[in-house]
Image 1 (tube, rainbow, N blue to C red):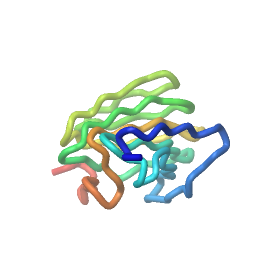
Image 2: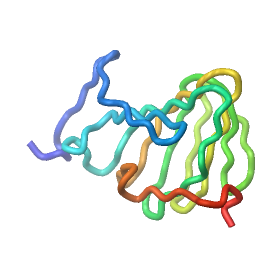
Image 3: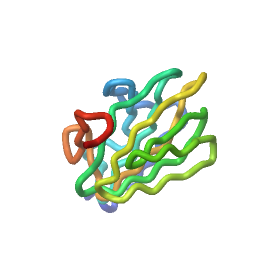
Length: 129
């Protein structure tokens, strides 16, 4: 069955290996074999952390805040985050996250799909210049 037509159901508590990428804990919700037009991740950033700014040249990115509070820094502008908030980041949007006193947990979807080793670029200068 091709990836485009493959139905995927992940039961709660079923996890893929979590990848640590700096302060990000990234749990893929689709394996590479299941990936078609998008990738999906559950992302967790522990309390009192700041991620390195990154961007995607091709992928549009969607975040839905599941739990926790913090700040998203989007092209240098801070945006307060709380559960239920939604972010749409067009390709090229430089983004980083700063957590408060609790972990920040997010659903993260990329269209087209990307992975840490594909279409993910970290900005060496935190100010993005």
